[in-house]
Length: 483
Image 1: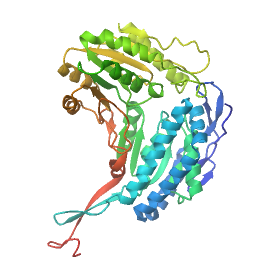
Image 2: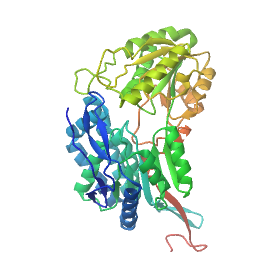
Image 3: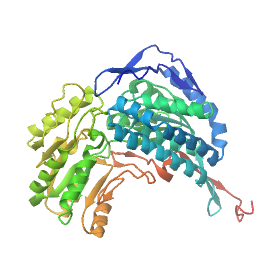
Image 4: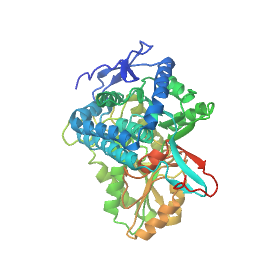
């Protein structure tokens, strides 16, 4: 898998241009540790130019009918579909995703979302609500600064850029430096379809420079950020200086509750899969498995047997279910959490550090049992393939443990009684929840409670997030039909 190419320019006002900087950031293949290519480490001055272009493009773009904006998103979707194999290969090299997952999830899911945003843009109700003597209109917030992570590099971009463009906003994007190349491919597509200059702008660089410049810029009206809690808190602090709208999608420590009446084999197997997907590098991963105290040995045995089937390897190897972690730094973080789990007394049933591969940032599926809810591995987001099996004494106890977290992003409950599942779902404080399954629904809102974030992405709410509500008071006694 050699060098994919160097992308040492930035995309501003409808053209690839040189950065003010000549400093380059090297990007490495996580499965081979070979150099993939470089991107430029941009400057605050680059952000200034991008924002200027976005400000200039906003009036004309926001004035377009929603259906016309949606047509650009539809064209983008069509080109993604036409280039699916090559774009999936790009993500596989950049992130380490197995080929099948890169096609189905890393490219397939954002492709689906673009189509949904295109349809919503054409049908979204921007100005047809009347309350009393007021016409309620929803207007685009303005210029959006989007800061996205590396774990689902195209999907996280599309959730922000797709929703913002559908709403009528213009965008300045800072994509991740760990898996950046798919963002360049998206910019190429926007350029090819003739997206008006300045509507979408891409500035590459480190968060400490570009993220700070975007968050603090006085002419950016809204920040949409996905990433770690620490970085999200910093974005909020910096953005507060200019009192801009902030949307945050942050971490998770999601719990699945398996009730005593559930099909344990099916439930545990699904829970392992929802923990290990994308090598555990998923904010909504179900990393805590809550089981009745007297059935923990049964659940642990099933979890170990299922987790052992999650073969690790390079993206193009046969039978691979999990690729490497994104970087050596991330591998070290995950390994340190495994060490903490052992040190604090959890039972290490399956040790993902024992994989025998000398090259690549690999940690295999890892299972801990008899985990106390207060242990570090039960409280902190690991962002790796580490499952914690936690015993509970009653349904109320399980709900208490599930809620005993700074996070509130996702979760699920398994039971043969759907009404009982609904009762549990209403008591667990998370933004999304599944009964007898869990998956990302591209049509419904996604986001968290507590320190998992503020705001919602995806679907109808994923457009409304990028709008401001305005009340236009009509003359007393006059309806809109009469005005």
